[in-house]
Length: 417
Ligand code: RNT
Ligand code: ZN
Image (cartoon, rainbow, N blue to C red; front, side):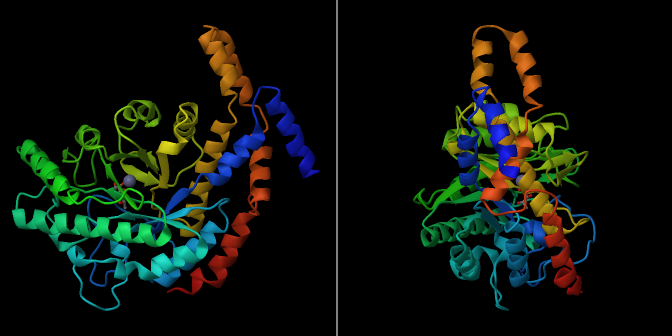
């Protein structure tokens, strides 16, 4: 019965020149990088960590957040078991396991991430990494790498250097590349006179962080811009122009976070421009809602357009898909799964687009047929291909995954007080 549904879908797509088998193969080999920080509201495990700062906020108090690395890993395993395919986990430096020792962030080493790496290795997961430039006394006044005080800048440069070394070490142990993403909160709430100086300091600091040559087989660096943060509304040192210029001139990966632009600005159209000038793109797939840049991803037009651009431009080999949102108002594991599956669905829809046919119409100047086919293609049975994808990878295709999450909530999460 189900097989027939897929077989019929396959035929309907084939009639438009779309190979569903090729789409399924691609789907099975494109990982998403799950953000560890969705599991504990960006808390991390440094014992004396204060509240979350840096202009980001996780609102809500849904019960059951992970309190220890073990809990977080177990939660991630549960989420990953309901997301079809083989994936990656994105770590932040503040998820270091310090075992009661007092170690400063500029002195972190791979030793603090051994348990994470062992775990990833055992499960065949890739890892990605982020230095943590927030929730720390030396970031309390809103500046880190672009701070006016040289000593503060030095501390954060050292943290960046330490993180690249940790990432390279992880990459060596896993025999694959770790992407290390640099995002800093630096900026101010109100009108700022010295915009220029902070940006000059930031260039110098980043150059110092990246001075050490590291084998790109094990670590590659990305830089992430932002429009504004909460409490940082008037000035963000690391703006889009800043990082696009930096990434292009230093050949770094540019990280595009879907929530970091003006409310009606989306990132889909940026892909084919930035990839002319930077080697690769890291996506922070997210959903901005008014002033929040980090709502759970859903299958919306912006996410669909993003994946369409990546597929149409044949960029899958140069784009890394990372998730970045944090919502503490719903079950945190469900949040991971909803966002990742929606991202995958957007990718599948893009792969199923009759793009050769559409391109032919476009090349022939037949825009009536192009628009007509865009609209007719929306009625094709993509859901059957998604179901087949999940079936082949042994993950529930439909809503029933929620039963597993609810059971986990009853048996595990509700016992965390
Ligand atoms: C913040 C950036 C950044 C963070 C993570 C936790 O606005 O999006 O990527 O979400 O580093
Ligand atoms: Zn981000």
